[in-house]
Each structure stands twice: as structure tokens, then as C-alpha cells.
Picture 1 (cartoon, rainbow, N blue to C red):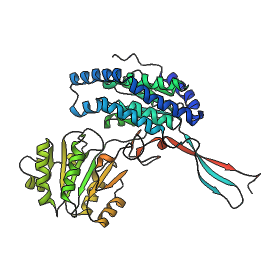
Picture 2 (cartoon, rainbow, N blue to C red):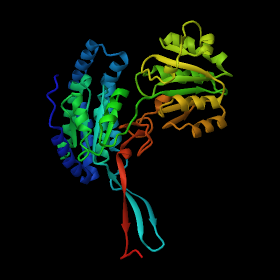
Picture 3 (cartoon, helix red, strand yellow):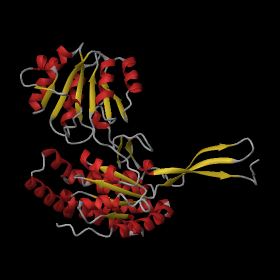
Picture 4 (cartoon, rainbow, N blue to C red):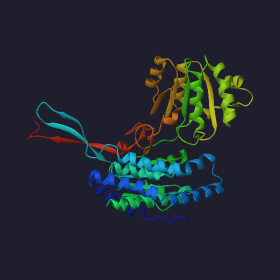
Length: 421
């Protein structure tokens, strides 16, 4: 499918702005009905959606996309059903819009509270993963926002098919089609124009490679939720259960290597390195994972280990490659993560509760784990239904963002003729 010429993005954004007011004022049951209908349309149109996706995958293969990129692009019946299920999970979450929080009566009788409200119009710019089209639409609608979605060229046909299902669901609930707008262009200039419409768009969330996110951040006049890359660490502590550590390393690296919560660096405490590194190297060799290690790892792991450089400690491979380093102790592991981490996700494997507590407290990343795979750093896994993205910027929201991250609060003040003296 060929994308048309760049549309009038200001007009699309103006229509989205008008739709956002309608969505924000719509009763909760109307937005719930729209989400349920969208899930139903995804299931009813599964054959056409999967056909469109198969065409995108075939084109991607012809273009020489990597296996990791193709995995991000590909839909199958199970993945599509999971997307529909996520929409229903979002629909069934407690209502956010209009929720009153932090009621704080003052001594003089003035009543203060905060009310949760939508942000307005959210632009999402993303690559490869067509499920983002649906996740973003559903989360924005749940939070009372309108969404402008600009997907990548590699998923254009898939996104158009998914967009048709979303539009049908909106129509069945009586919501305006501009509540979820797909930009019908894959021209990069459209991104630059879109993110400069600061009078019409309230927030931009880019999802994709570091190059895309930096491009958006450099050109945007609207606020941007940034997540440049996911350099996720697994630290095998001196008190680790080594069988558990091996299982967590395998799951974190191999299950889906092309996603941002996959492990990119494994830190091994020197106390357990002689017992653990040979096992890790052997298992990863069986699984086809290239290991890049420091001198100690190469000495313990065998000739297949590639010499690591400083570039490897900062790398997000998104592939069957992992960097492994032996560190002296917990302090050294913390120092490495602070130096080379990307504030995404880190996990410690240990039976020492004190060491775990210190790791959880001192590591500043957006998700920190104890004896768990980094692959759980995902909105769907953390109770959000789905995620709009992962923020590593600490402002407004930090970590996986669900519908609540697409809202803010306003002050509500009730008095009885109170005047300030």
C-alpha cells in the first residue's frame, strides 16, 4: 500500500482538538462502549488485518529488515487477540476522568481537592510495532484524550487496517472519528511539522529507535516524553541462586531480544563468577547468543567470547547479543549501572534481602526488580492494561505509562463566601 502525499497536518490537528473536547466530556460509559466496540472490530476484522500485516512483513523481508525488526512488525492470531484483550482490560479499568483526589479541608472551612482531567491531544510517533496503534488509541480514549498517530512506513498497511477497526468502534459509540487520527503519510517531514503544532497538540510520545526519538526531541515545540534506549541490566549477586540467575538471564535476553526491556548487560559478582560464567557462556552458545565480555569473562567463558569495549556497556543491541562483565561487589554493580544505564530497568538476583533492599532503593531507574526478569517492565504486565510508552525522563511520568499517565490534575476549591485577608 502506497502512502499519499503529506496531508494538511494543521487541519488534522485542529479536528483532533475539537474531538478531544467531545471525548473529555463524554460520559464514562460512552468511552467504555467505544473501547469494547474497538476490541470487537479487531476480532471481526482479524483476517483482513493479518493479511495486511503479512504484506508489510513480506515487504520488510525484501527490504532486509533485521529479524528483531520483523519480530516487532509481525502480527499473528495470538498477538492480535492479545491486542484486543488489552483494549478490554483498559476499558474495564477504574474511571479516571473527573476522579477527585487528595481532598484536604482547611481549618477555615475552605475545601481543597484535585480532580483528574485529560491532557488534551496526544501525538504518538512510532516505528514497526502495529500494536502501538491500538494500545495508544485505547489508552488515550480511556483518559479522555484525542490521539494523532504517525506510524512507520514498514507497518503502513497494518496500521491502516487497524485504524479502520478503531474508526468503526468510535462510530458505534457516537464519538467523532478525529478522536483517533492516523496520519496518512510516512514522510519524515510530517513528523517535524506535527511536533511543532504547540497550539493544538499537548504532548508527543515517540516510540522507536534512538534516532527517531532524538529527531522528535530536536524538532519539537510540544513537550516530549523521551525514552532513548533500554540498556537493561541483570546483576548476579554473590548470594544469588545460580539456577535462578541462569533462567532469568535466558528469559531476559532470548524470549524477545528486539524489545526495549530485554537484557543488554549482565553483571556477575566476582564471588560467583567462576561458577556462573561458564554455565552462562555454554547456555548462550546453545541459544545462539553472542557474548561480549571483559577479560575475566573471556578467561572463564572460553574462546567464543568476544572482547567487549566501552561501546558495549552502552549498547542497546535489540538482538541476540549480550555484554557480560565481572564486578567486585554490589557497590561496583551500582556504579556500573549509574555510569552506563539508561534509566529503564535493572534486576538483581540474590537471596540476601539486605542487598536486594539496597539495590531497589539506590538504583534510580524507572523499574527496579529483585529475582524477576526485566521482561516484566511492561505496562500490560504491571497492571496498566497496556502502555503508551516508557518514560525515562522523570518528568510528569516515569517508567511504563498507562492511562493515568495521560491525565493531570486541576485544583478544585469550594468555599462559603471565603475571602482572602
